[in-house]
Amino acid sequence: NGGTPEWLRASTGKAFPTPETAVHVLLNMGSPLFHSASVSKGRKAVISTIGVLTAGGAGLALALHQAVKASDLELHPPLYPWSHNCLLSALDHASIRCGYQVYKQVCAACHSIEYLAFCNLVGVSHTEEEVKALAEEVRSALYTYQATGMAPPSYNEVLEFDDGTPATMSQVAKDVCTFLRWAAELEHDQRKRMGLKLLMGSAVLIPFVYYLKSHRSSALKSGKIAYRPPK
Image 1 (cartoon, rainbow, N blue to C red):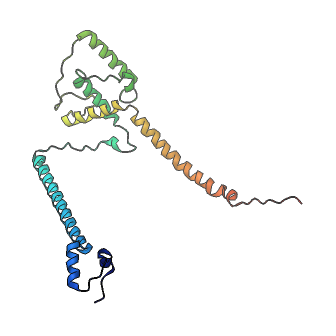
Image 2: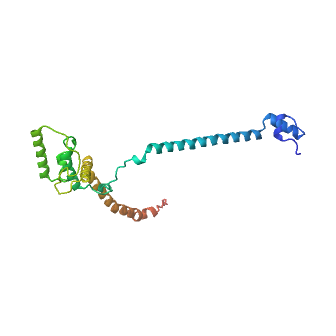
């Protein structure tokens, strides 16, 4: 009705007066309209296939994970509320002393602490006189027995604490863990003490610096310098 379209006239070089002839040419030449429709259908099919494969793979992986997990047979370690886990909390020095006693009587026969000296115990868990006695006792034991053996494992009442603490298995494990935690980081309490001092100093220094910046230097910020050329 409106004549031959411009794109059809450009592709064939001549006009087609009847609609039947135009449809015939479109089918034979591959019209862009029909081509784009086929491409969109193919793209949808590819996307759908990829989605199905992805969902199937995720479901299979989840099923295998649940099968291998065997949640009924899992053992999770208990979360003990250690007192030194807080930001500014020091180690329990009484527990360090008991832990050293556990290490000395149960663990030291087979496990040594190479980088820990007796002087490190002074002021932490023992007095200087107690440390000297411990060092003398160890020296005498080395020259007397000249032999070591595997100590018994940890169990209830495996030893008697000097301060009368009940030596249950959980208490023994807790104390020896605290001792080993201290032995791995001797500066633990000192580092937290320095951090506390830094926070206290910053609480005083920061407001003072802000006051100087806001008030004392306000005259310099708002002041103007005028240049008057000589006459």
